[in-house]
Image (tube, rainbow, N blue to C red; front, top):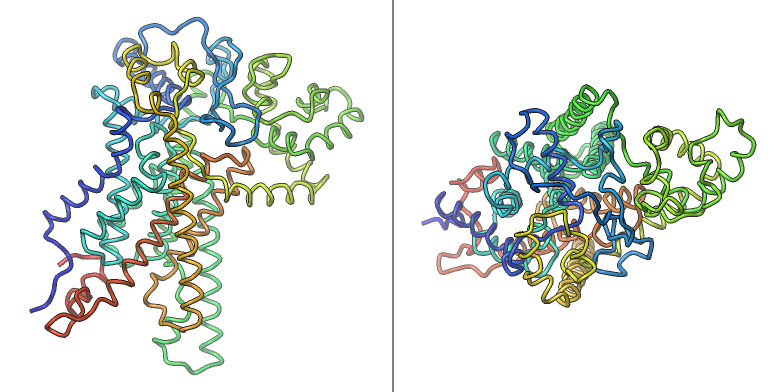
Length: 560
């Protein structure tokens, strides 16, 4: 009698749902989904779009009345990780109009807050509770983990649930699953891209379509996810071309057996590359559709925050370039940033978000200046790069390396300063629930979550490095490690750090949202190796190894 390591289809569904419940434990313990200062912005943006599309009165309002004055959220200029909200949406002490960054009445709408993720939050609010949004996030992540750990790596359901529990309680994955922000989809975008490109050929057609649809939404949820997936696609494409070229060279020089040669030259699957490319193209089309709708409604396209200009000014090369060229340019040809060079160097957070006209630049600027700053940032960045390539590239490399090491949890604590940021921006009932949440009553758990994240990440890194060295010494067969997926996931982690460091700065939240991929890969590979080496039972067969028929089903992504 052959041993079956897959449970029944009903059992698989139960395991998937239970894994989603495990991922929701941090939010459940908090008492409500975790909030971030950008959350109301996502929701109100989607509400405004749906109201314009469906007409007034047809969309339930987030707030009955918008207050006249609000505390304008903007990041602190201090070093990353210096407080519970250190990051791109930390609070500013200044008060002012809520439309400090965008002003639709003046034709200024920002493209940085995804209307598609905002629609998810709006749909959850429409359905009666924001819990629906985090529940969907948990189901998406649990299903993607199931595709990797059970369908592809063949782990039994108890091991799958144990790894899901590890991610929920010992890594930032559970916290970000319960956070009303698109951050959890950053890691899912990396994992889905790697799964499609490395092992998509072994999934069923329906499973590939499901992973691709999840990837498409993840790319639409935030521009940084799209940039990361696009760079991963370029890297995997180069890898695929290299393996094809080396295989052709091997055929012309060595007479190795075809199967052995194929094993030695495996690379990303071409069909998976096409799937990821289609998702990238779909996300770009979704962004173009949003731009077109805004242009038709307001007469002007949406603007992107001038992150590049702010970042280069903060780093130094941008400040040096502007100080050198601005006095030499006639007034009609000067960059918009030239008018502010007397304040440079300036922290990028103040450049973008500070509403005080004496310190900030973009937020208090008029609509015409905002548009110029946004439209000129790519051209200005190119000129700064030509002016000081070593300074720009060296600074980006150093910031990327720093970002890889900064992943403490900074989304949990709600002290008086943080709660004050939500006054007038969330409904009164939600505000009361936030004050009564565990994040407000026990903010010290933020440091404990950070310690758990550090331990799990360091442990996973040591395991992967040790495994690589051990395999190199033992020269084990490569079929024990799924082809290409682990290197692509690791590359995605580095690319995420580079994208975030280039567009913003090394901040803990940017890497914490994806660092759980390391413990996931380490735990999955460790469990896979342990089960492969499990002692044989009475029948003489390993307790894990499937029958020949089951191997065929696994190879095709099926389930017996």
